[in-house]
Image (tube, rainbow, N blue to C red; front, side, top):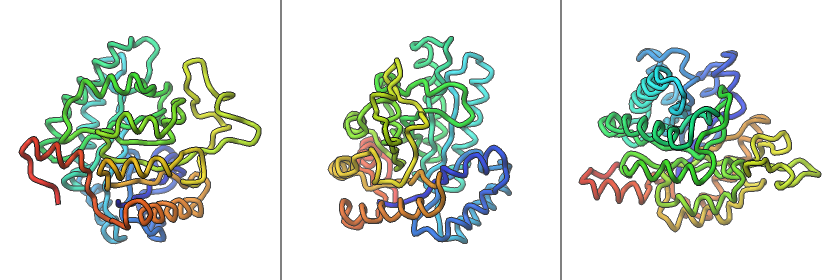
Length: 319
C-alpha cells in the first residue's frame, strides 16, 4: 500500500483564489513521509506542456510521484455544448495524468451534478455515454479512470448526481470495462451520502482501483440521524467536520481488512489538512501504522481486480 497526500484545506487557495501555487504545496509537502501527491485539475494554472512539465519536475525534485489526478467533470449538464466541453476537458486531464503519472495513474471522473431538470434515466445515460467515450483515450494512454462516490465539487451548485448508492451502482453497471475503469472509494463520502462506509465498500469491492482516506467528526450534541435530510443524505452539515483520519466516524478496523482480503494493495490518498499541516501529519502517521498492521508494511502498488482484468484482456502486467 502506497500513501499519497491531497491538500483538502488548500483547494480554494490554489484552485480558486490562486493565492498559493502548486509549487508551494509541493515544497510544503516535503515534510510529509508520503510516497506521492494527488493533484487537482485547478492546480494547473496553465495546461500547456511547459507548465505541466514544471509541475512534474517539482514533484520529482521533492521525491514524489503523482499517482492520482482529481477531476470533477459535469457530464449530466442539461446543455449539450457544456457536456461536450466537459468531455474535452476531461480528455485533457487524462493526457496530463499520463504525462505526469505514467501507465496506471488514476484520473478521477464523476457523474455530474444533480441538475433538478435532468431525469434520472437521462442523467445515467449522459454520464455513462461520456465515460464510455473517454475510455478509448484512457486505454491508449494506459490511464485508469476512477469514479468516486462523491458529494459535491467546490464549484458546483448541486450535489453529485450519483451520490446515492442505487444510482452509483446503476452507473457502474453501464460501464463494464474493468481494465481501465473502476471505483475510487471515499469512506467519508459514503457517510455524507447517509450510508455505512464499510457496507458501501462491500458493494463495490470488486471494482475499487483507488482510495481516498478522510474522516468526519460530529459536533458535540449532534448525531447522524439529526442531520439526515429528506432524501436520506447528510450533506456537508457544519456539524459534520473534517478531521484526523482514524479518529472519526469511519470504522477503518472494518475497512482495511476488507481491502486486504480483496487483494487491494494500491494507493491511498489522504484528504486532510483542513485544520492545518499538523492534522495532515497525524493522518499520515495513522496510515503508516495501518500499512504495518493490515498490509504487512507493503509499499507495493498492486490491485488484484485490475491485474486480473488486464490478464483477462490480454494486456501486460504493470510494473
